[in-house]
Length: 159
Image (cartoon, rainbow, N blue to C red; front, side):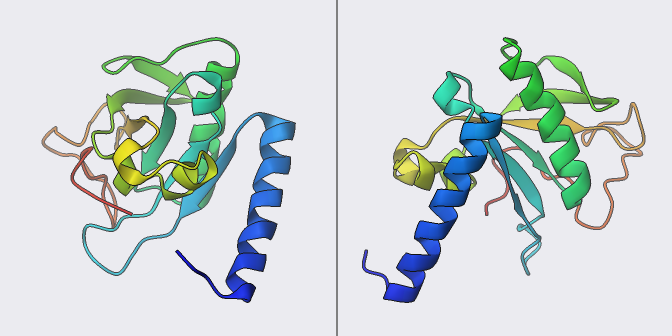
């Protein structure tokens, strides 16, 4: 893949910034705003947990601030030695989150795969953290209200 010199310089700066954040905090959060299509929700994910032997974490359908807060809290538990397991209910930043396996991480973790220099077909693994809205009502329950962009189920959306 060839890129123009301006793009190469920008990517080099982004890589240096990401490296500094990961060195300082042991992980970073990448937030991606919503796309134009219905299958392109806003989401965020960690970069760095895979290097610690844990899947990266993903939160879908929340704003930037809430996404960062949830991922910071959940990743903090991983840094403290906890391994999150699919099917487990965890508390992070005062919210209940259900850990689910993300079956298509190569379509979602573009920045993490770039960081680890892995092609999409050999993507780093990821876990999607489902959230309840209102509290106690999950995306698969009647009465769930996920807001404007909702919270698509793992594997049904891409970056």
